[in-house]
Image (cartoon, rainbow, N blue to C red; front, side, top):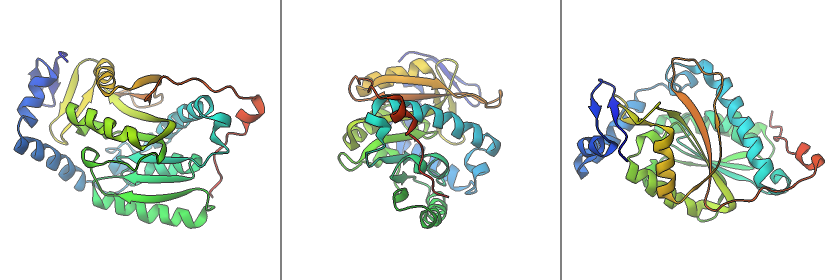
Length: 276
């Protein structure tokens, strides 16, 4: 990986390797990198506006874009859109449960949440357990894991979809690859990953404040290849403020998938469960 990049102070790096060596080049530096990242978010209020960095108003556009992409993937990859299947999802970097509450819990029978910032996860648990009482037993938040991505290993074959949004930038390249290699075992046959992230125009941009890296599209694709993952589909997020990074969604599979042929009536039957 030879693409050049910069940090938030404007310093230039010739390659990601140069940057990672400086910031995570030994065990002490790497431990501090992850500790600082969690510490940053521990100072952020547990609200939609907080987890979205003061841009709470982008929530609706974000959810709409994600839902359209998810609907396409379910229709193409699961027989009958998964309507006769007990669907389980993992929400990685779940924060306060924003994506679970506004999207995933409407399509999946169970959603597990993974989040290293304890007060975010407490807020998610409180909100979603209330939601569970109003929902049918068929759509619920099940498990809440206060564990960082780089330390998490899922149960074998539990998940149809593992959703990773706005959190993978905190992982080093090696831990990125390690995470996806561990997470593969958590997918059911035919299951897939969705990665939704900010994009740098080229190379990478390091945010020294929250200890995260924004990677370019080609940077991501190089890492996907290292993970042994196949890029099934991708889509750009629309409707976000121009001053923000571009955002892209990637659907990733462990094998080269085949599209499932369905009748029109079955496709129409693929609708989210009503929980309110």
